[in-house]
Amino acid sequence: MATSSSTSGALKAISSSLKLQPTTFLPQRLSSSFNLSKPFLPQNLNLKLTTTATAAARRSFTCKSLSKPSDSPRPTKVQELHVYEINERDRGSPAYLRLSQKSVNCLGDLVPFSNKVYTGDLQKRLGITAGICILIQNVPEKKGDRYEAIYSFYFGDYGHLAVQGPYLTYEDTYLAVTGGSGIFEGAYGQVKLHQLVFPFKLFYSFYLKGIPDLPVELLGTPVSPSPAVEPAAAAKACEEGAAVANFTT
Image (cartoon, rainbow, N blue to C red; front, side):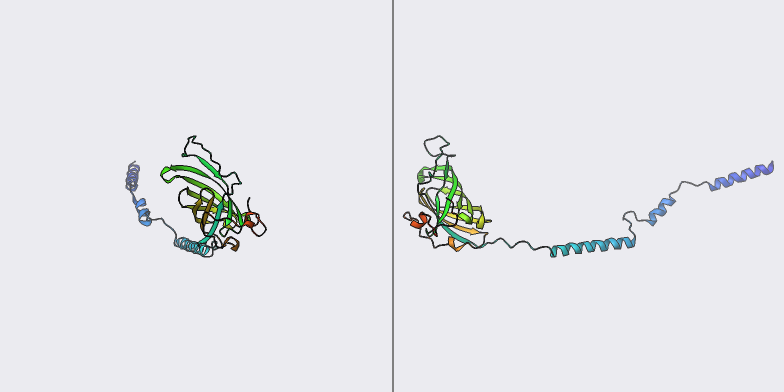
């Protein structure tokens, strides 16, 4: 019995000595072994990523340097083109639509129109104008009106030019060239409208950019503008050689 009691006491003593107390030993060791504030990457993997990133940057630069060059720059050379617009009283133009229903010209009245167009030297028929004017203001002291004009000049097979801007019946104005078709595709610039006889004779000086060189056929030396100018008889009759191909009628 004494021996059994002694043995039991010894086992209790050993059990007490082996009981582990709560500790942070393992986490402390882990914390000291790994710097958790920075992502851990094996050295060879880090090197591989660095090499890959450098190669990607080099490929990006190479692709850019070898990319297909853009189209040639938009031409900025200014080209002058002069034309006459003449109302020969044979097109029922202009038509005055008095939408204001007032006895005097008022805001909102519309004036559709279409006249014949000739080269600046008056030797060739080019085509027609076609568009509309919106009355913005009646100006009694100037004995005229201010319109916002939107219209096109047609040049047969050569294409057309579109313009927009102020049209004043009592003084010269500049309108914007807003585009075109045919040889005038991509055109921009401005055009000076010179009133000769309202609304029958006008002289235009275009200052065009963004297009190739204009054909010689359109560039005759302009006749000095005056109320007395008239197109050549052959041009007026649209005879062969006195009109551009497929001129717009």
